[in-house]
Image (cartoon, rainbow, N blue to C red; front, side, top):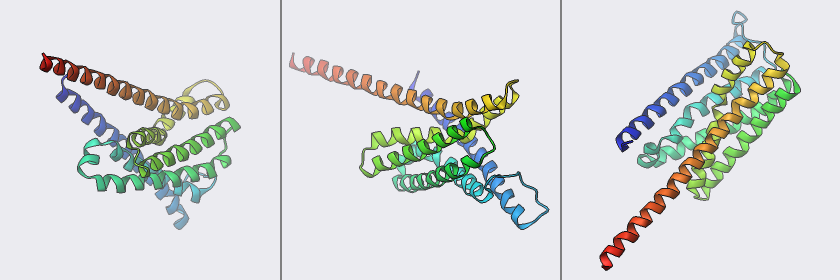
Length: 227
């Protein structure tokens, strides 16, 4: 595959991802807005929430994370405007911290099974820890490790998208929700994290092969010069 073709495919994939994240972020903002509006006007009817105020914080901060996340994956933005990358990265990290902590607070009050609560709490903990490690590696200037950890973090952020899809699937199955719902929650973030790990392994392996090929070419060139 030609380099230009790969670049076009990467650009198309990034724009598609950004559009998806933008759509779900708007939805999250809308849910938070409806909840706030219901406090002001009794005419606005919102969904029954366990902890309404915590939900608003979680939805709004999660939406910000969805908007800032794709910006961290854009290589051209990082290279051309490093200051913007740094600022948007901080916005992403802070929003994830708020969203993950609020999720951990609200999860025990969900009207779901214990297994589903465990799935939510595990996700919240991993989301916070992985994002924190990613920020730490940036501070210590271990940028390769930083990109890998932030990719893992964004994979968990995408639970806002994949989790809702898997939940819809679980509701459509002719099995008890006590069984299918926790599985849907786990699939919503485990598959994301697994996909991120596979991509990290693929890129690392590709970089290693490229390095070997490059060294081989240099060695051959030196041999020809010596002849």
